[in-house]
Image 1: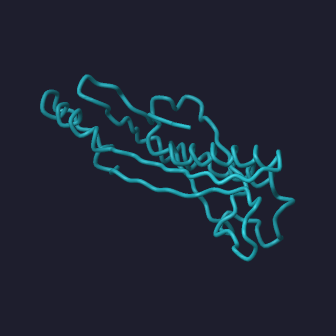
Image 2: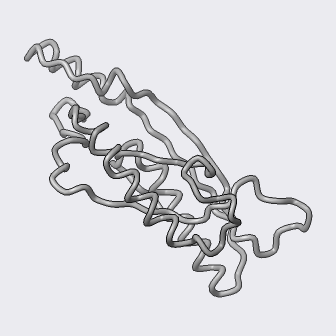
Length: 163
């Protein structure tokens, strides 16, 4: 499965896709081992940003915040695993939501010289406001599977992204 053009949120989108594939195999009683590879090449935006600075004196901060990066993980549904080799992490669930009226706050502009980052000052405020409701919905979806020591956000390892 190729996910393209969604920036740094692509890693979590790919992880959700892989988890759904693992769940589908598990429902059929089949093993699944999925390699998730996420790659972001922010340097492709440098040319268009430099052109904007030169021609329009327009400066955007996005290109200064992000860099090229890559990561990989293998996701498994546990079927057919060797006994005695515990998982490092268990993916218990995921939640995503669209924040109304935020489509102009985070994204990309396509320019003849390349892509440009769109990043408004509202992004941190919007992301912070959605954390508690997202956590509450996510936790309620698998609360019955958890020991009593997992009740607060600080009890978990999190992967969050405002994109």
